[in-house]
Image (cartoon, rainbow over all chains, first blue to last red; front, side, top):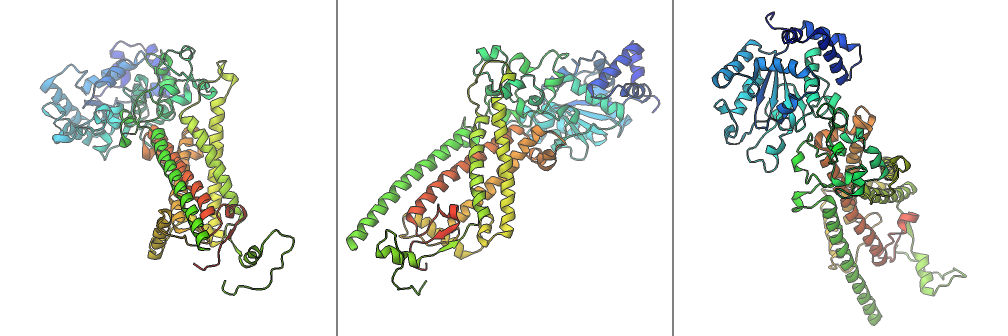
Length: 361
Length: 249
């Protein structure tokens, strides 16, 4: 496949200097947690390997993953990866539309059979034969299955593709289903988040292109390099957590002092993501830094974990607005009351029996 | 217990009337709970109490104390430390108790099973229920756990504590990090539950499961000590079960 350009060629064609290219390689190495020795390796791979085509399909979603992606802070990453992707298929970002776009998709699949990466943003709804999401006149689930058939690997972008997100929240009327429950025979990388961090997205793609393999995944299929720790584990407010210094109400004095948001329902302790290290918008900030708790958007079913502002999850099965403590306290209260009544009856019975014995005796 | 001695009582210097003396000379005790079982019971009780209090405060922290620099205090850190330490003690104790079920007497095995297929067993359970509902006049005598207690112990303690150990270790593994021994052994739990917040909630509900047991357990132990025909509370201290009458059933 000599007709396929390398990354380096694409970049040079776009007027990027060798010097800028090398900067990009070192930044990417740093982002992936690799040592300086890997910079030339990345540069070599980018300059010699034919680029891997990527098909980017959109199901039931809000396009926030794409929005995040095009804001990648590495100055060149977006140009590189984006130009590469737009060459193939991404119905949101590509110039072609309508029949031309669908033709481009078919062309890409034909041309690179078994070699392209399928990036999925959003998920297919399965109810009513998938009629809740139509792409090019057909249910999205059909496009997804067709594109997945010859893909080398699949990237599930965002909470939608990875876990279902808001459209799959209970009661999930459209039966929106995450990609890994529809495509069962392909390696799938989940990059959850609503949206995922831009640098995480470009980092995952760059890793796969550079090393020609999948990044190491954890038990839930997420790249370990970005999802192996909780927000909480690297949170800069963690010392306040350990000290027991919490914000008690919004805008109280403790909030001004930047104490821990645990009591305000921050989901940092239960959320695996890189927000507290990579941060957002060129490393400017992340939710906790701007004074709001983490809502746990990169976790499975995060819409169904009760309010964003409660530490303890509401458990709907026990009635509206119940959490573990209220359920447990009610149970313990009922049992405690029953015990008290039982004890009273027992005492009466015993007194009665003693009286009887006295009379009989 | 049929051949009751009728010899004259020989106890001296005891404030006892002839009835007491004849009773004392007849009734004996059975050694039920061996020392390791008793020690485990009380360590377990203390650990559970500690875990409940600290666990509750981890879910609903105390009001902020001290507004100095964060490095000057470690309140929440200590609460969590005590919780983890008590959890480890509970876990080690539980494994020790399992070991003792193998080497101890047959009463020490009662905690870990109940004779599901025995009709006689379920009839006795029903009888115990009737006793607690004031429908049976008198309870039966049991050397070990009564059948209903055995059922409760199995579901609340054996299964309950196992559930708490597994979910608790899985939560601990999150902090210990991927690749740690805790993650290797218990990381699969989070893989199964998928969401850490959900795992926290399950662990939290498990606490109340055990609280409910505790309330009933303490009440029933005291009640039976007073109203049944045998010793209960002191048995978990001395290991001896004593009976208050000589009737065989």
